[in-house]
Length: 56
Image 1: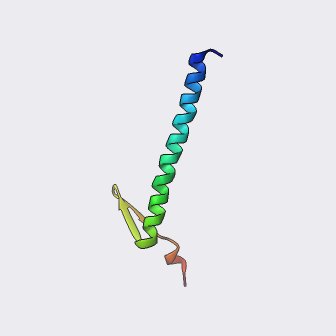
Image 2: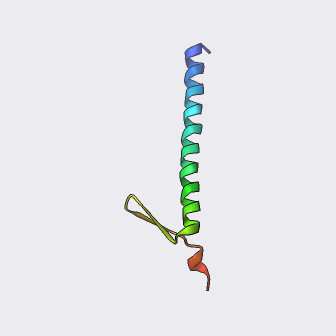
Image 3: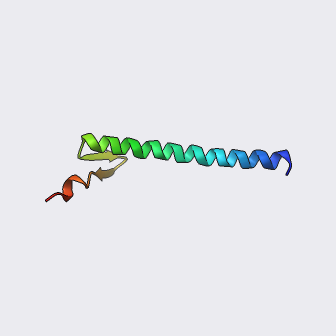
């Protein structure tokens, strides 16, 4: 393989890892936020903590 294909492959893999990392931090932030509040509203969406609602 020539250098351009190797660069494109490494760049693509790096970009995928970066995107997965950003999404992971976002979901981790939502999870930590739900520990302290029963509901989080982001961009018009309402995310509720379902664990507290399942207890009898």
